[in-house]
Image (cartoon, rainbow, N blue to C red; front, top):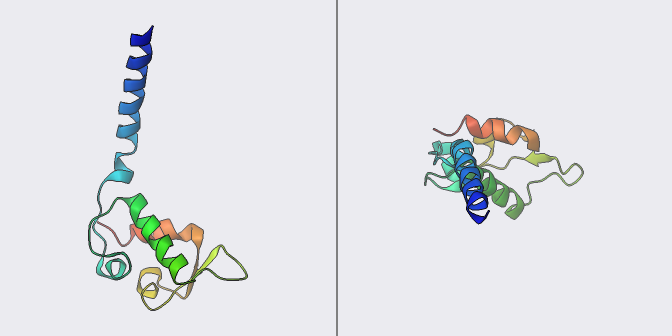
Amino acid sequence: MAKAVKKAATATKKTAEKSNSGFMAPLTPSPALAAVIGDKPLARTAIVKAIWDYIKAHGLQDQKNKRMINADAKLKPVFGKDQISMFELAKLINQHVK
């Protein structure tokens, strides 16, 4: 019985690794994005986390509507406008990674 549980856990782990490979692949940021998070290749999840860390550190969330992010001088080239919704962030990141 222990062998069956161990075998199932191994199979589940391999499936999880395979399905997340797209999120975990290192991506190179564009020069505009590199100005915010650095030029080191990072996984997509790490890029999103680094951007959120930057947003929180610089107080860029809109005070009235926390779902909106205000762009500063470094984020404006990445966003392309003065303010975006937090739901647009992933879409905009796709345009700035290879």
